[in-house]
Image 1 (cartoon, helix red, strand yellow):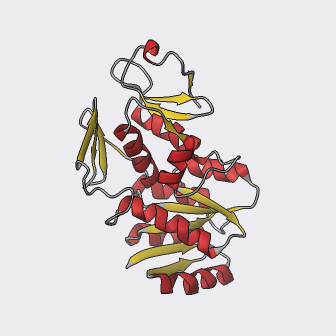
Image 2: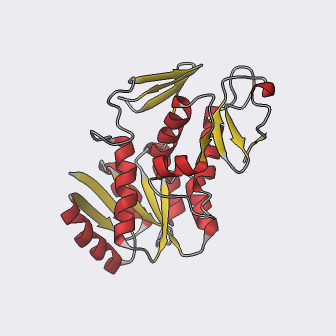
Length: 247
């Protein structure tokens, strides 16, 4: 049974989500301020944290910042409807996904399950490790699928669940273009929408964490308006028809 922590000062919403998620097989804890949220999150093991932005004592961004210093536990942030700044800031600070309020609990459940599938793949799932090598290596980057770890030239790189899944998809298709549509579907578990920039923010964070390759070239290339690829060749001539840029 997966254990979830809800950090939200809306007690009615916490009660509603608890009643909805328990029958779906989750164990739920709920707290209602940021200070208690970070304390409980760091003192206990949770599979995922649902974190509101607007909290008393410490806001959701402060909680997320402290949490990311100590843990890679997946976080879904709840943001005010239409507040794109909150969503982008949350993703840049290490949130795995966001959901604007008000929302349908079924959508939250779908987001939760999509994230947990990336961490604990099940038989028959598109991201299942069965049939794949447990060690995935491209150049100086190595992914251990069993340990859910990534190293660059032997040094550990801390990735969120989304960043890990995103890198996996790019490495498995190294040297080939992967569309934004496919990345959003596989990594975020939803369909592409016109103004959804979340995958681009995750790519930007992943690029910064990976750094340049030993030749001083960016590892992840952006094909404008289409998608991304993990570059194998240094020469731009290897893809003459594609225009690369960084987000």
